[in-house]
Amino acid sequence: MKVRQFRKLPVIVHEVLKAIGVVAGQLGYSAYLVGGIVRDIIIGTENLDLDIAIEGDAIRFARIFAARTGSVVRNPTRFGTCKIESKAFGTIDLASTRTEIYPHPGALPLVQPADIKADLGRRDFTINAMAICLNPHSYGLLVDPFGGHEDISKQLLRVLHEKSFTDDPTRILRGIRFAARYGFKFERGTARYLSDCLKGGCLKTISGERIFHEIELICRERQVASALAMLARKGILDALDGDARKENLAKYLRKVSIGIQRLRPCLDEREVEAWVIWFGALFAGLSSRRMQRVISHLRPPGRAKRLLLWLASDCKRLLRVLRQSHKDSYKTTRILNKVPMEGLVHLYSLSGTSERKAVLKYACYWRHVRPSLSGEDIVRLGVSQGPMVGKILERLTKLRLMGRIRSRKDEIETIRELLKGRRN
Ligand code: ATP
Figure 1 (cartoon, rainbow, N blue to C red):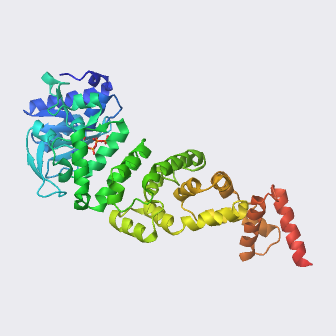
Figure 2 (figure 1 turned 90 degrees about the vertical axis):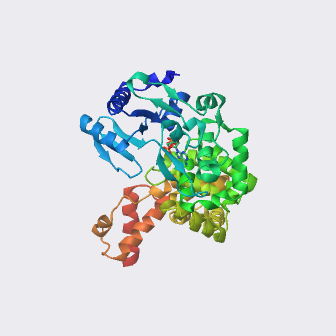
Figure 3 (figure 1 turned 120 degrees about the horizontal axis):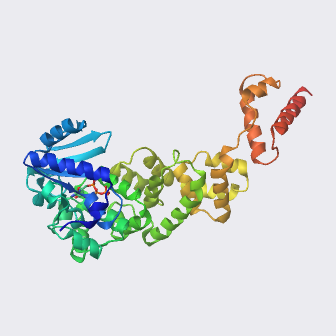
């Protein structure tokens, strides 16, 4: 069967794919487009990540193709994978078709050369186990040995065999990501294998880092809230000892979503990473001890770790402080200056209406308030150089935040009065 939607790919992409098919044919190989792009072509979602499987020696193919097209081969491995990079068409992932054998559950697989059908047979879901042939005589023909096309039309996620999740439990997290992204459901048998696998403790067979990586990908999805809610429903948070909110998680995720919407216009993308906020939402409310366990298991890096630590150690206390201080713009600013930016969204989501207003004002306005005079200006006005200059800058910031002064003129006036007071 030809894939109708395949024709809709940009002309430049077809040119590259045809060239790949021609070179493969000349070498006596078959070349296929595989993986997520085939699924997305059929679903009708944009995806230009070119993932090519070669029935043959992919590294040899890549070297010859690169020499003919002026591109470069990168990262060749002994498993027959590499990348081709070119200014004209970007990066293409290449691999020799292969099978994978899992020596024990959760282990990394042993790899052996095989044909395209066997290669598709090692994949996670039927919708990801299709290929489109690129050789000239069969260009555009769909190879679909497991019924992925039909499962897309039924909006189902189906594994290829009952041991799939046990072999590689990261597939559970991948499945949840795809289910949320496309609004698909797990097919009945697949849902049963998934819950049996979790009940048997299969997540324990893979490293926390791999689990973290998959959760990060989920947190980067557009439909993140429904994916995270599903993560909790399926008992994955429990398995990670992270479920502090139980059935309330969905409600909290809605609040976080509103928090992100409200605060986003005032936060610079360079200072906040939305996926980190969502990651924190999964674990907000955990005690310090449980949070430490989650951190040492998942080993989240940088900002994600900082947010988890802050959520466990400071968030509750700050909510109490904010309740007392939210009317005082200066005090609130000093308090919130110490909060990680991603934490602001959590404070917003967990606060009452008045405190929320203060958090919003802080994010949009208060945190940017600075005196218009510089330290040098202050020295020029007669203040001697030293710690006093810093104190005056802080005082001017405070007065501005309190609305007691508004202009540069007011600032100069304040300093003059201060100096007069000292002389007298
Ligand atoms: P995305 O659109 O999120 O990038 P993708 O399906 O392209 O999704 P990749 O991680 O790039 O995801 O994987 C490419 C292909 O490799 C998948 O479509 C699937 O066929 C196969 N694959 C990836 N991870 C696994 C896994 N853990 N088990 C089996 N097959 C996998």
